[in-house]
Image (tube, rainbow, N blue to C red; front, top):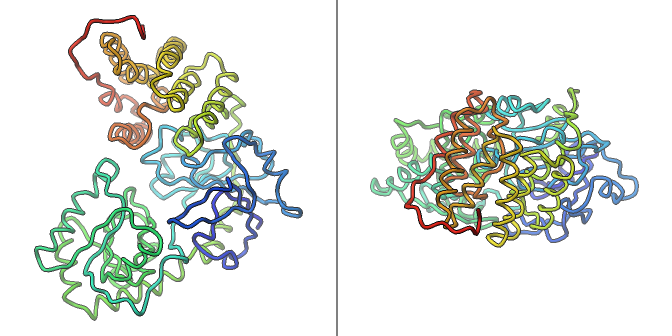
Length: 474
C-alpha cells in the first residue's frame, strides 16, 4: 500500500521494515525534530498555507497514494481543501484529553479515525462516522535498545512529563515512587530526557515505572521493555494485556500493592531479570514495521466514508484544529477568516476568528476580539465558548462589570445547553494551563454522558472588586 503521511515513520522504524508499505512523507523542510533528531520529509510542503491539491501535484513521479495518513491533527495543521481529498484519508489522534476543544469538528476530513480504546466511543458520540481502535505507539528503533555493556545501577526509573496540571493523576504515583528511596531503593525521576539519553536511562534501570493517562498503551509501555528494563504498569490499563502477559513479560500493580510488588521484584533479581528478558523479547514483535500488516488489514475494511457537512463546516473544523498546532499566527488567522467568509453569521466561526486574532497579535488585538465575540454572542444565544472568551478578554481590562456580566452569561449558557455542540469550541487561554485542561476533561465527560451542563461550573465568574469603568473595551 502506498501511504502519503505527515510523519516520518522512520523515527520509529527503518523504512525497509515497514512491511507492505511504500511511504512518501510531507512537511516543512525545517521539521520534523523527533527526540532532538531531524528526520527530513520527502516533499517540502507547508500544510498551514498550502492545499491538498498542491501537495498531490508535487509528489514524486510515479507515486500515486492509496491513502493519506495524518498523525495528530491537533498538533499538525491540515492542508486546505483536505475535505475534498480524492484519496481515502486516515486520521490518528492521541492527546485528546488535552486538545478536545479544538478537535470536535474534524468529521469532514477523515474516512477513518484511529485512536486508543477509550477514545472510540467518545469520537463516535461526536459524530465521527468511522472510529477504530489502533495502538499508534511503539518504541523507536533509533533510540531504544538493550545495551549489554550498560550497568543497571538504578532500581526504578521514570522519565516523562511532570507538569502537575497535565499529569495530575500521575503526580501522587510519582511521589509514591520517590518514597521507595526511604525503603532502600535507588530511584531516578526525570523530565525532558530525550533520544539516546532517554534510552540510556532506561538501560540503566532494573524496573521502568509507567502509568498511562487514558488507559492506553503509551510510548513508555514499549520503550521500557525495549531497553531491557522490567515494565511496571497500572493494572486497570485497557490495552496492556493485548501486548504483554502479566507476571511473565511485565508486572501490573494497583492502588493497594504498588510498593509491595516493586520491592519484591527488587529483592528477587532472578525473577525480575527473567520477566525483563521476556518483555524485551516480546517488544521486538511490536515494532512499527511488525505492526504494519495489522494496520493495513484494519484499514482494508470498508466503512461509510467521511462526513459531507459542506464547505463551511470543513473550514471551521480546520481553523479550530489549527489553533493548537505549530502553524504561524498569520496562517491560523487566514484559516479562521476563511471560516467566517464561508459562514459570516456563524457564532462558532466568529469565535475562532477572535481566538486566532489574539493568538497572533496578543493584547494589541483585544478591541477587535471583543467586537468579534460580541457578534458571536449575538449570533447564537446558546453558544457558551464565545461568552466565556469575551469574559476572559474583559477580565484583563478595567471593565470588571462587563467581565462579570459576560462570565455569568457563559455559565448560564452552559447550564442550559441543549446539546454538546453548544459548549464545544476553543476556550481561552489556549495551551496547557490548568484551566484549559479542566475544560478539555469536562468537555470529554459532557460528550460521554450527553450532559453539557456538566461544564457549567468551570465557567463560574471570579468575583473581583469592581474598579471605575472606562470605555476602552465597552
